[in-house]
Length: 111
Image (cartoon, rainbow, N blue to C red; front, side, top):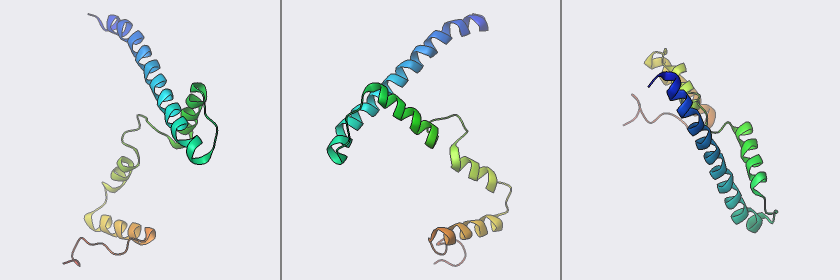
């Protein structure tokens, strides 16, 4: 089979799979919203299309599922890779101090 034939056969399958994925996602959001939110907060029940809109809004605001190579952890690992072990430990200490976790429990000072 040539590459073009594979693309021609795969493209419709990919489109159908994407549509099914979106439909299932919208249905799950709608069911969860309608099960929890009206009971807990007294907000109205939503339709399937409103659930899809909510899903799209969350994707825009929060990122969600994407092909960005691992997210924040991966970007942090890429940043820390050129550092020496001492620089990494200083960086970790600064992060712990900034976020209120106190001194490190690993390294030379802990027993």
